[in-house]
Image (cartoon, rainbow, N blue to C red):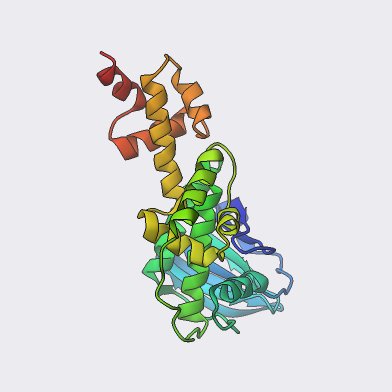
Length: 282
């Protein structure tokens, strides 16, 4: 199992885990103690048969198609009877995190989350896929990216599975020039350090959900994507300056290692850092 923990809402924590169930782990799991939280499971591959148990008895048995989902309210005790090997991405969302999101966004709180087991939701599937790829490489996990995805998950679940039908928010506006400059300066100053949406929003005097939307309206990019572009621009300047080796440039620009630097550079520029420098220094 690989997991990521994040605090997209101040004072609360969400956890995202990728569960790989092999043949050696089949059978009835230990019961999960009751708590005021929700679990959203997204099945990454087809699963022919699965059982959900509560208080020693089966309460749901069915198969799941790839990218289908299930929501479980943990206010009761649950266990799973694992009948076949499979892989699942699981969001653990305490009610405090969900309440924090709706309060922050100016929406009514959600009383309950529920969906038909086995529902395929393309939005949840896309978000789960983005985090699944990140969980495969935890060394390069980016807190800004994880926060943004988890906030998107909360927004989608509240709106579609929590009966959230309050009046729509006012039309979003971008950041003021001063706010945009402050956010960019903070992102640039902490290019090699951990930075959260909370940090950026506080610097601009905005809520987390408002800041994310406003930043993208102003720049055309999410904060995570803007910082990736900034890192690459900084790396390009270093590549054209003194003969600094690629590993050192990767570290100076906030990449986990040279391999991570190469992947991001190639995706955004269309060439490897070494080739890009050779073509311009001939």
